[in-house]
Length: 187
Ligand SMILES: [Zn+2]
Picture 1 (cartoon, protein in one colour):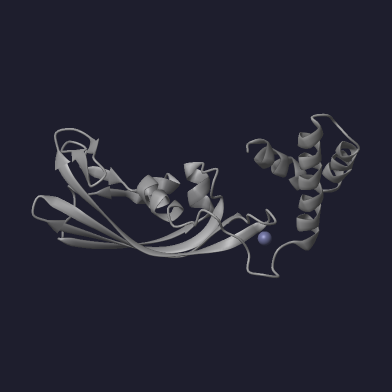
Picture 2 (cartoon, protein in one colour):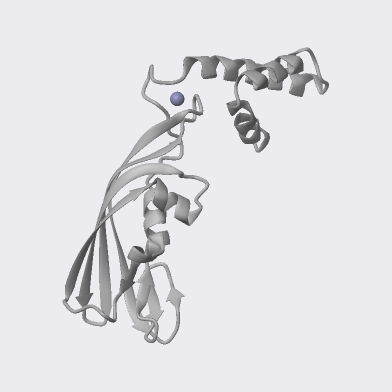
């Protein structure tokens, strides 16, 4: 069975008006979705599916954390997530999602909530996020300071200077440099 199959809700086949499901979202979930932004975490999710007149109300309760790189030192940090979200789904002629209401064709009758759940989680990560004071990787922060100073000097001179060699040395010491360079190069 596909790891994500349990996130497909058979609305047409619902035997009762209310169906409550529990999920544990972790690295396997993020890996199955091939998410670049979030690769690890642990969240308890309760989903209540309620059949109402003409539509289904899906209410999510999400609690736990995800691992994302800290803005200050780039090491992984645990970002707590605690939220409640809702989506409405109805059966109709063809697929549609207007942001408020998802329409699933009658003949399919199943809604896949994996990406919706991922988005609910991702939306809860603050734009800037970092470790509590004192929990950052000091060595990495010092290395970052040196690197950033070098970048500024190169930018100012428009030419390569002594600092470049320093970067190469640092890169051999710590494999995270390649990741860091990618991030800085994109700015
Ligand atoms: Zn940090």
